[in-house]
Picture 1: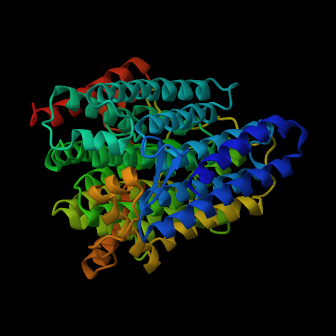
Picture 2: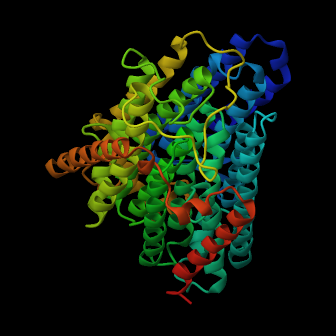
Picture 3: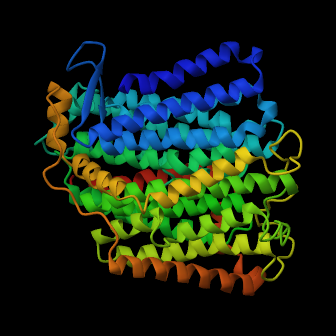
Length: 584
């Protein structure tokens, strides 16, 4: 099933490209949706089966030197999440982007194929290939509206920064190959095990990790993400924010665990991940609170939550990793629904500016009002739902994590609720026209060919499914159990190497962390929700003063590609210092 899950969307995309111009739009929509659903079923079955032990297969018959595919619950689960999000995005898009024709469907299927391959491969070079496929398609999807200068600029910034990250990853792979003569992750891991981490090994790890951290939008390599989200179509944002960023984090953790854990101590990388994760969470939170452009607001929220995920998972313990897995699932559904509502606002009002949309959202009778506010509450960590459970379980990894999570959840959740209450219900003071140095989301072109007279049922169904999935991640005991098993299996490096090299049968982990709600966790979730409501109330009362970016941070995020490149290499240097200072 592993090769089929990767090949199916790639082959279907190629076939649809060949015959798509002759197909009615409804048939193309249905075909793309069915293919994404089939991939979701395949990867879901793989994830369930893998809870009893990893599934390993080789492309071709050349074992163990062939291209190995390895599925454990977390990798297969992430691939399944990508497929489910693609299903919702395709359902949402039935009446959206009609002028894009079947090219949109082809790109979405190729994007899905790249994400699935990235999550399931056990070969470092093929991980890079899928990484590049995923990136190249994402650039095209981001800049689909080539007649819009902003769309082209956002896609250009996205492409330049992520391409530089890819070159860094390729350089790291080359250094690793020079040291070990291997491209397979298990083979390279065995070759490095027990040897001292010299300058070549450290440089290889830093370069490979830096490229993946760019994709994960980890500060100070995060600048591209808000520019891309601001111009990408709403269904594309569902994938960029819901799963692509998280795949970058997954790739970093997977490469370290399999390849470098035998030569670079866990304590060294934990320090790096915690420092970068906390920096990312802080920058993302502060920028999120100061946005009036709704899609940028949501983008910085993603950056902040990505920082929390990195800091928690970087501790290298099964409990926090299980919490991050649940948090990623909950975050994907809630954030996808929020971007979908932004697409509806853009269609109706040609704007995603909070000040310009004051009170124009339709009030309580409008379904999108309920969807937006419900998604905002989920992001705060409201018990007993998915994002909240993920934060509660992840916070058990370190004494300081609850305080950081509470702060980030209150600020980002408060910003989302503030925007929803102002736009849909007209609460709070009116915002004046933006200053020249502020981002503005008004006077934008809609992404639909013609304004929709009413919200199509397919769009509402997609958004409702996203919210339902986000909520269910916290109230499904079996899913929590699988997350715990997957986290324990993810950290069992010896068993991974044994299976990937010999094809031996897998077995379930001996020790599985307990994953579930606790009394203190419920109280912290309620406190975070109360904090977000308080932040929203204060910002609504403050008016313009409540929606302002910190001056120094605002000046760094003005869209100058040269500045972004400089900060990218500053991030690489920071990572090198954090890793190398303890080893060389």
